[in-house]
Image (cartoon, rainbow, N blue to C red; front, side):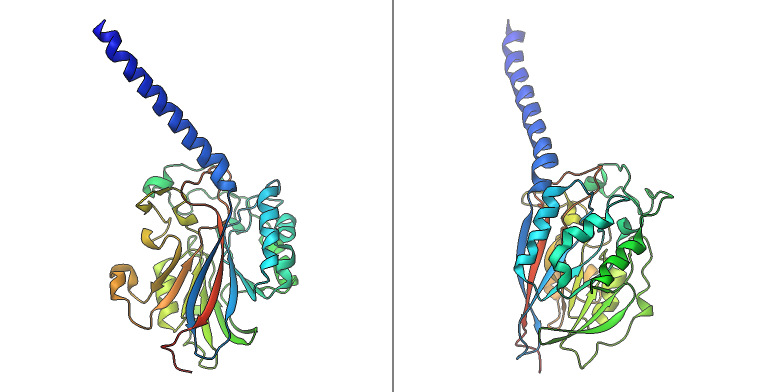
Amino acid sequence: MPTTTVGRPLAAALTAGTAIGAGAAAYATWVEPRWFALREATVPCLPPGTPELRVLHLSDLHLVPRQHRKRDWVRGLAALEPDLVVHTGDHLAAMDAVPAALDTYGALLDRPGAFVLGSNDYYPPTAKNPLRYVNDSHKKGADLTPRRLPTQELVDGLTGRGWVDLTHHRLRLDVAGVRLELVGTDDAHLGLDDYPRVSAPADPAADLTVGVTHAPYQRVLDPMAADGARLLIAGHTHGGQLRVPGYGALVTNCDLDTARARGLSRWWPGAGSTPSSAAPADAAWLHVSAGLGGNPYTPFRFCCRPEATLLTLTADPRRRI
């Protein structure tokens, strides 16, 4: 009898725990990955007297054509009428996704835009160890296949609609009365980055120099900030994809610290090895997007909704005209 009495509560607890675990897994797999969020942030990085600039940051769409809910949601972002769209890569997740991606961006392609490429714009996704989102066990390049995605078709489609390709390019773009200098690199996660090719002091004639890259590795962020970029924009991390309430991201899938896995923070040369409280007054702003998708073989998200971000760039009163 005592064994039976003790065993019933234990069995009930195990049953409840299994049910909770199953519910959490179902939520992380089927609910949150489809619960898209529009974030908004204000970034004081422009000279005094410069008009505000609204920048829509998109990243990590990882699109499969059948993802109609995601496609409709992204297409609807055109109603925001941003002054500029910046996409930080990983547009694709299927060999036939380019036409669907261009259709998904829709009227956003009629706005001024700029983009870089990520690893999943070169190689299709493969099955991966889910532990990579818990202990950073995933090694870059370990899951690449001999197949190649139609990268040039994507680039031609985007540039043909007027977006500029920032892959190892530095260029001027005047948008809504703001003189921008944009500089970008190829994907650092695959080791394709070569920032020295485009390194130069920030253009003094520009109101703002913006550094754009897919994966926010310190070897890219540091020289961009050293050159005078006051805004750095990246994706790749998926915000950690699995976040612990009250703690945050467990991994970033690069050498960025987990505190900066998503959202707005400050960056300066050497920031990766010094506390944020030591940020100099002229530190750059860094925005990392948690992105809109993920590898279709590991679609789960927990406490990390897929997102796009509307950045409102405003005047920094500490800057000189």
